[in-house]
Length: 79
Image (cartoon, rainbow, N blue to C red; front, top):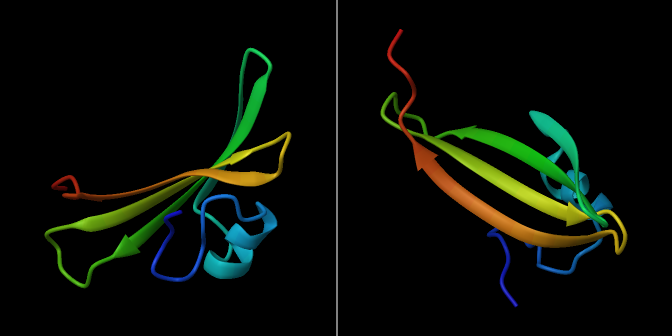
C-alpha cells in the first residue's frame, strides 16, 4: 500500500481526505458506466514562482474508499 506524506493511504475512507487536507480547491463527481467517483483537487504553493504542486485524490463512490492518489508539479502560466 502507498499513501501521502500526511498519512492518507489507498483504501482509506473518503471522508478522511478532508480530515487530512481540509476543503479541496475543487470536488468533481463523475460516472463512467456503473463506476462513480469523486475527484478532490488540492493546489500547494512550493514557495517559489517556478512550480505549483497539485494533489488529486479519487474516491470510489460505492466503496467510499480512496482509489488513486496523484501528485504533480506544474509551472504556473505567465500573466
